[in-house]
Length: 64
Image (tube, rainbow, N blue to C red):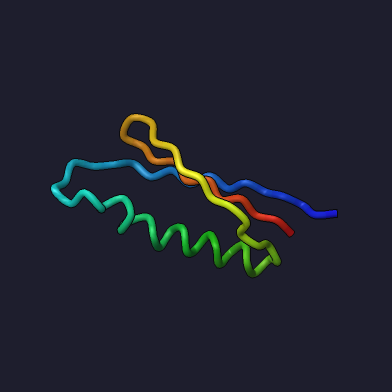
């Protein structure tokens, strides 16, 4: 039977003229989390994002 796990990452926006600053600043954190799960045998199967106020929530769905 497969196991499933959800990891939530939260990134906060800041005042800047670079409209892609969240995407740029979150890449390393997301890649680190993917590497951590991959080492333990988990596989990324889906993602989702939500924005609320100044925060961006990224959901990573894994299965094993």
